[in-house]
Length: 97
Image (cartoon, rainbow, N blue to C red; front, side, top):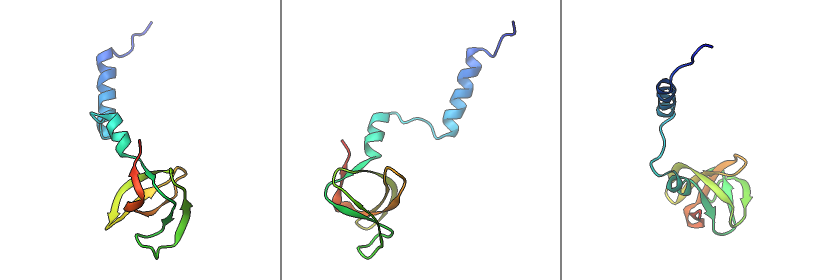
């Protein structure tokens, strides 16, 4: 029987992988809650940060959206559950519960 690497080596490899991927949050539940928002009223996902932007799709109240981190004034760039990306007014968003 051939012995594999000891547990210390496996932990070292895991730690290296986690570090390369950006690490783990110290408060993962809090991070997840901040990573999603819901639509508080009917709205539109637009291709630009303006009422004049082309409508990508209509959005229903309660829909979960995922902020990309980009903003322009009162507009936030988000993606929906199927990967559509666009802009919504910050006034129609609330933190997901």
